[in-house]
Image 1 (cartoon, rainbow, N blue to C red):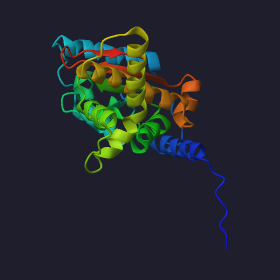
Image 2 (image 1 turned 180 degrees about the horizontal axis):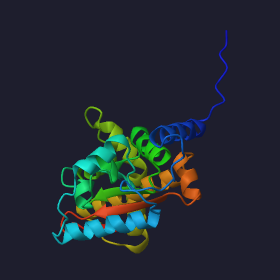
Image 3 (image 1 turned 60 degrees about the vertical axis):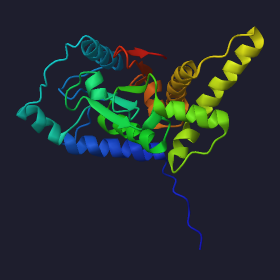
Image 4 (image 1 turned 120 degrees about the vertical axis):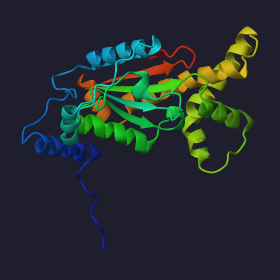
Length: 250
């Protein structure tokens, strides 16, 4: 006996999930797409401005004191409205909540080594956009990323890596291979000196950020639809371990 395939698409499921979540949280009404945790509408551009202001405070060692209060904790216990979803590297030196001087409930953070394109991570961000109306998505890589360096070395030397770490290498293969190919082309065409390993790592890191941003922007996801409607903005950022600055790279 054959089983008919469901005609319900992934996007329709996400829409339904978003509608159900909003109805439960707000007593049957539909929430605005861009609402901050503190209340009030916030646009993608305003969310980005807030992140950049928070990072400026981090850079200058003028971070705000924690503002968690019983009232805020109580509000967040019933409903979250993060202003940004961030795909960040798992590196211990790059915690987005600190880097952007954010309050409890402001950021929806997914951390994985190398901030790679991964179905689980992207699905988590998609969930934030569909259910919480998160208006901004940030893909944040960083200076001297060990995951990028390891992937670059493994791909360049065609060396197997142990355990499940190979999944990270494979996720990073497209931008790393593109970086290596571009560098080879430049050397061949201009008789340019070879880049150092450190320089290649930084180029591959930025290429990986842009690769994930592009995948988010073009894949057949709820995210792409929200972006086309102007409800979501997707940006890439590169975090400097030396200065603490998170700068736009896309």
